[in-house]
Image (cartoon, rainbow, N blue to C red; front, side):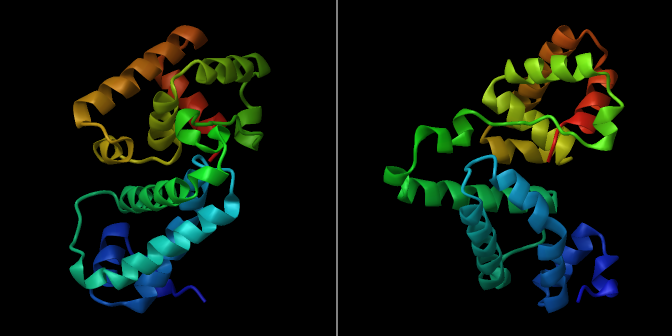
Length: 201
């Protein structure tokens, strides 16, 4: 059962509690972030069971290395995303002979249009234009858009996920938004609103 005491903690305090050996904090980390980790992991492979196994591996390694870890200034979700991505890619490399090119979503980072209630408020022609415009971005631009607008990863923490420096990441996201603004003929704020309403996790 989820403990109310830890469920109310901020991410940073929760992480600090985990580092001090709080078992309930460790369980809450899994509860709080595993769904988002699953959504992100599925961008790299269509093997959902592999993603689930890699999430479990991430948390096993987390608990096994707890005493070596330190408090981090990074976003906790981003930290877990980086750890998960490394484990997934390492697993895919070990099994590369059994994988097809289409399994490597790094080469074609898929961002889908949602059919949720919020997106229904967006005009059909806008949704169609968004789908076309997103498809014209590079895979890395799509990943940056997804991390920043959908997973709400702070810009300062995205470079570690893209294996880029901060300025290159900022430029990448800026160019992606310029391309979307041009194709959708809307303001940056308008594009941001549509992205948060219509892109699926």
